[in-house]
Image (tube, rainbow, N blue to C red):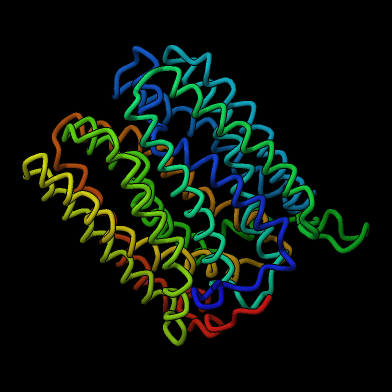
Length: 416
């Protein structure tokens, strides 16, 4: 079955796959209500919630860069486990978040944990899987996460429909427990050790590491292109559910249904899409993804002009178009980020790459919610512009960075 879907044999990577899957299941329950949670359980308004989440993400920025050095010194596995612990504690703390500053506090702790997890995630995957199957493994694990999100999305739709504080509190407790289970699974992952090969080399990554990265304009260009992709991607968690439920006043179950559409498409379609990438250049694939993102945002804007019944049907179709962009963009960008980084500085390089996701977490909540508070169309015009910038940036970067313009040649490989 997995081979038919274009995914690899993971019999030798069960701990990694189990940990990622459990993490995704818990996060999938919470992600569709991540903004709605505070709107429904506190008296804090939309704009203030967005600002609080942006402040929390900003507080985590210095730690994002520190994670790179920690990964190079202590190994990706140690850091990813620490990230799970921080997130478990943070989501228990959500139960006591009732005003602006307590929201900032618990969200900042969650952001620190997310920074540790995601800063170590790509190095751990790269260290634990075959080097010639970057797109295959990043695609597979991304699809696995989305299957977990789909299952969680069904539960979140029930929570939104119930709409009580107790239901929302149950969601954060489930998410916290999922991080404990993910910790237990990921602790069994072999590999993911520090970059140094012996005591004599232990300090090698620290010498000049950040300076090398700061002078690598091509890699920083890739970080910028991924920032555009990240800003488009996080709209599913921030702009789209608030637009559907709070702006268009669609039924509560629609929020969860949108995540189910997205995650089922990724879960069952990602491997097939990666297989079709074989023989095509990475940057061309990602540019097509940006075009489909823009088409999805245009369709979302058009849905806002329809009666509620028609909009309820049109919004999932719009999300399906958006999802095609996600399917095309993620694996090639992740593969280019790993291949474009020197192995001994991979932790630092990938932490800079992760910074583009953190920057989107800082910018998106305040920007998207403010635009939605202004009118129902501005946010989609902004996102279409961001997708266009991503296309232009990748087109300019491809001739100068082989990791970006590389032809995908291993997408047909399905063994471990």
